[in-house]
Each structure stands twice: as C-alpha cells, then as structure tokens.
Image 1: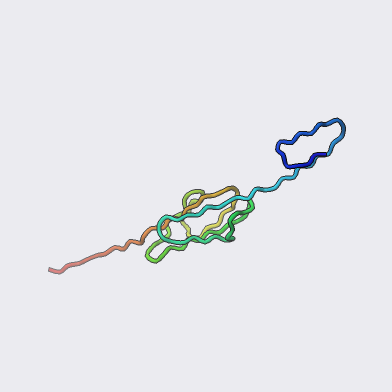
Image 2: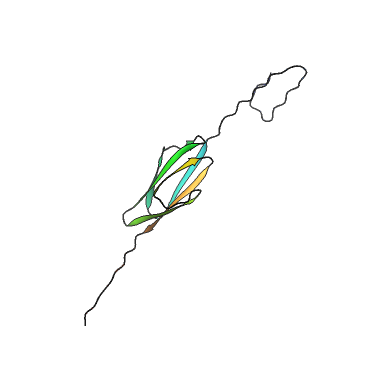
Length: 108
C-alpha cells in the first residue's frame, strides 16, 4: 500500500494497510595515511566495507625507518593489527627514522 524511497513517507489510513520497511546497511569507509616513510597494507583491500567487517592493517617501514604507532581512530604499537569497521575511520601509521648510538673512545 506504500511504495517508494521517501523518508519520511506518508500514508492515509482509511482501512487496513500493510507497510513493509526495507533497511540496508550503509557502507563505511577507511582512510589511511602515513607520517614518515613506510607503507600500509589492508586486508581485505577494499574502498568501502560492510559494517562489521574485520580488517587487518600491516605497517611496513622503509629502509632506515621503524614503525612507532597507529593514531586517529586506532591506537596501538603493533605493526600488524586487526579491528572491526563499525563506522567511517581515519587511521595514520607513524614511522620515524631509526637512530643509532655512537660511542667514541680516545686513547691518550
């Protein structure tokens, strides 16, 4: 007795009516960025996800760099991490240059 995709929808009730609402999950999006030098891979590698999808991120630092942490909508220090896409998310992988200690001894 009621068709269309208008929201809200109106119907005049003068007798018994049958109305069925159909709901669809809206896809959610993942935005990834990096600070420093390195790459991030995601699995599954998609542009949008159905809510409830489990995603694995892996941070791979460039030579001479190391992974430090995830920031934004994900926090942690493990280079491989797993989370659930329950809303749009923006996540940054932070890399920093490796530092080395140098000890110099002199004689005399």
